Each structure stands twice: as C-alpha cells, then as structure tokens.
Image 1: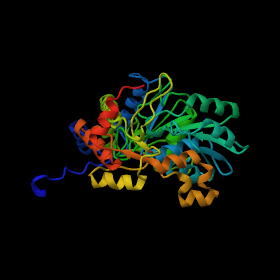
Image 2: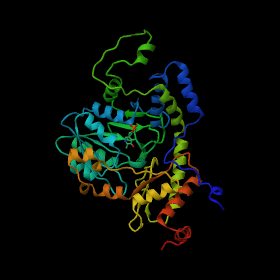
Image 3: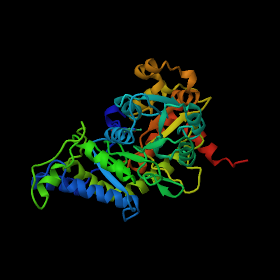
Image 4: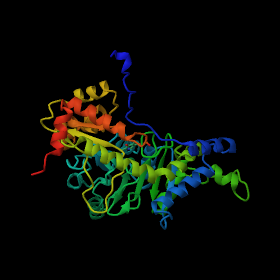
Length: 411
Ligand SMILES: *Cc1c(COP(=O)(O)O)cnc(C)c1O
C-alpha cells in the first residue's frame, strides 16, 4: 500500500465552536433590522441569561449585564466594588492573564497565590495567608469548569470584609453545592463567550450580580459613563437626545449581532453540556490505565463540571516530557494546548512582583506536566478514540497492554 492510499485523517483542532442555522438566521435578522449595536437582542439575551441562572425564571433581584468580553466584565465588576490604587486583589497564579490584568487597569496590585494540587483551583488556605490590611477582594477562577471551593472562599471573605468577584469564564454551567455558579452569593460573577468557551458570541461576556448598586454602576460604566444608552433614548416614549455623563466610562457594550448568537447558543447549552459530559466520560475510559493523572471529578455533593477544558497531567514515570508529548500529538494530527503558563512565569508579572516558581510549587508542578486535550461538542466518539490512540502512541503504550491493564481485576 502506498502512502497516497492511506491519507492522514484531517487535523483535529484543539477547539471549534458549534454554530447552527438558528444562530445564523438571528444574526441575519439583526443585520436586516437596523439595530446592529446594543439593542433589543442584547436585552433579550440578558433576560434569557438571567432566567437560565434561575433554571427558567430569573432569580429575584438578579441582574445580567452583557459586555463585549469577560475581561471587560471583570474590569467593570472590580471598578464597581471600588477597587483602586493602593488596594490588593488576591487571585490564582494558574489562570489566564485577563483575570489579573484588570486589577492593574484600576491601579491596584495583584497578589498571586498557589492552587490545590488535586483540583487545580485556588487554595483557600493560601488566600487567607496572603491577606494584608490592603486586601480588598478575591477573584476565584473555576478552573476548567470545576467550581473553586466557594464555601471556604466566601467564609474567608466574610471574616475579613473582602469582596468576591468570580471569574467564571470556564464555568457555564457549573454547580457548586447544587447552586449554579452565578448565584452563589459573591458580589459579581463574570462569564465569557469567547470563541472556545462553552457557548460563544465570537467575543462577549456576561456580568451577573444581585447587588443593585453594583449593577447600576456597571451599566453606566459599560457605555462611556452615560446615564442612558442609545436604545433607551431612541425607544423611549418621548424620544430624547439628552443624556448626562457621570463618569469617564468604558466602551464595553455587546452588539446585537453578537447577542443574536448568544440567544441561540444559550438555548442549546443544556444539550451542549450533556454532550461534553459524555465526551469527558468517554475520554476518561479511553485513557484509563495510562500513566496520566486524569481531570479531577467534582468531590463535593451538588457540584458539577462544565467541562470547558479536559486537562491531563503526565504521571511520574510516564517516560516522556510534556513538550515532547505535545509534539507527538501534533505529529498525529491532534491539536492541544496548555492551560496555563502560570502568571508567575510571565515576564510582566514575574518582574513586577519579584516572583519565583518556588513560591507556587503546586501550580509549577502541574504546569510542567499538563496538556489540555481537545473536548468540544463537534467531536465524535471516534474523534475521542483517535485522541486516546495518539496519547497512547506518544506514551509508547501498546494498545494491547492498556487493554490488559483495564481488564485486570482491581485488587
Ligand atoms: C477566556 C478567559 C478570560 C477572558 O475572557 P474574554 O471573554 O476573552 O475576555 C478570563 N479568564 C479566564 C480564566 C479565561 O479562560
């Protein structure tokens, strides 16, 4: 057989959005309607999102504020809780830089702390140890889609009088103690609709809060610090050109073109979630018995996983270094990634705060061994098995040996 007779299967990308005809038709409707910026579809998306948070009916007093990225939402939330120069905000080193950069936008300082090595989420004991008289807020990240230890973090915040703003970019939908992230009692929660997240609007985000004053401030600061937005002014019973600028705000509003996508992505979220759970379970069984640490499962009752990321770690004795492992996967046509290069290793954060990897042993240990494998709703079961076969080949484990290990009775 010649090589031409066995074409390589196409490259399996690390992530792909799933966008259907309903989304496309709604975008076309926005384009034809004349409202291409923030308008009726954004309002509807906000209302639908608030209702989703309540399992069908918006929880009493819950505000959902659409923004053009989660980064914008985190900035607005921290601004609205009053973070400013001289303040410190504690977050995990094991996150994307957006989580921390917004603190610097406000002239405040970031205190990075280590993670729990089992869950890869921010370690509440490390948070408590990092509190100083300047500390004003904690920003937990629900890493990969598994809730951080919110009961412990909220208790610490209460004891020390701190604000809590959740970076829930991975956590739609995630439950913690039976409650959806977004309704847990923090000051604000911010979701992302970036292209690779569990639902997407291309770029976009949602700030959710039960604090009416925080919501009002975020709405004003979302659009230049104006006390009325264009939709308000042009659709009011008495059309009005008049508005007042009450602060130097930002330009963080979501467009109706993006919201059109979000309305339908949100409707499909329960089906997406079911498929992600199936894919994660299939991946778990296909990778069983290999020298890998598989993703942690929720350990508290009432907790569920959003499966935004499927992160494995090479076990000691895997016999291959992470970077070589990734090269092998790419050579087999499998896209993968690393979440994350911890913030303490990036020049800006390292130099600004004089950080060293020895201060973050758990994050560092995980980083050196971790790989995010592809997991998204457009993957087939066969794609999962293909990923697992490539992983097995990279580890040098013959198919049969793994099958035997799986078949062996547990002692
Ligand atoms: C994606 C992501 C963000 C930023 O989201 P955007 O919508 O792209 O601004 C923030 N934090 C984490 C942990 C993320 O994964």
